[in-house]
Length: 399
Picture 1 (cartoon, rainbow, N blue to C red):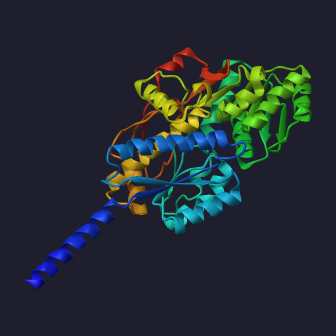
Picture 2 (cartoon, one colour; picture 1 turned 60 degrees about the vertical axis):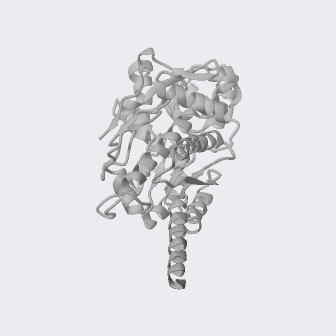
Picture 3 (spheres, rainbow, N blue to C red; picture 1 turned 45 degrees about the vertical axis):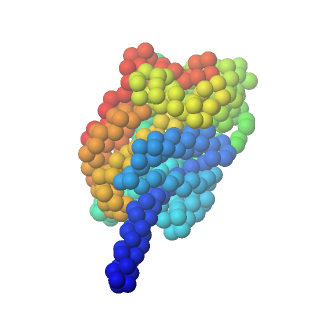
């Protein structure tokens, strides 16, 4: 009798331990700048991820397990990003990480995920080489993925807007000194060269610079008809305000960061008319986008209802659903299995940016293609569609 009772007790204990194990949360890293000049992007991305994770958890999580987000502020600093990556992998035991706003932080940090065979999804960083660090033949498999519009796409769209749509033949490039700015500047020069155009001025500045007079004067004296930019919000505002001080107003056409709240607010009227490529504009032009905007506003109550960086929020939200689908398909949290699932996703993901239908393959880790990106324009303190024809919604992501 005692033996039977003891056996039952052991069985109950084992069942309880298995149940507890099954209920262990799935730990997922979220790395981005939540302070400083890049914070509108980082906070919006993080909040988009949080929103998606909460929705998934409310429906039972993944394989009956809740998602636990392990968030870290990388401060937009390469060395801090490296520290965060090591901590998330070694100490926090994350099964994957989402994030990276800044191209330099991404390039410095994601090698640790590659070495650990843990997937990382860049949901904001756009440097063209971000997904190309670990390619064959040197690396059999690549653990770096992305669901943002890379700079090859953006530079081509910027140049098309300036040269084809507006017929400018003299353009200047102003880019910051970071990896993001300089890699973007290189992509812009390549895209211009393909149109047989050489910029009349190419100028550089540092993050936190507040006076762009010297750079703008060179562009003005060279006869620039437009200024093409690669930088982030605060410095972009200094460019717009600097043109106003010089009494020289030409169009600003630049990378997607011209949509950041700290550009729009700091530039004020001087930022009106700026144009930039966008994967998502905060307009409820599809049912999915309408529900996302309403959910974000209800959860976070942003000032005047405007998401600080709508693109970052939408891509963050979508990245969580993409990763969740891959973990579910893999049937476990092994990094190799998750990577393989990402490269052959069977489930279509109804995202905010687009519907993701087999967005990745083994050899292509870019979910966003040019036909999914539209041109936005700053108007009355918000970003709107620059062209009426783009309001119908995005094309599907399919490889």
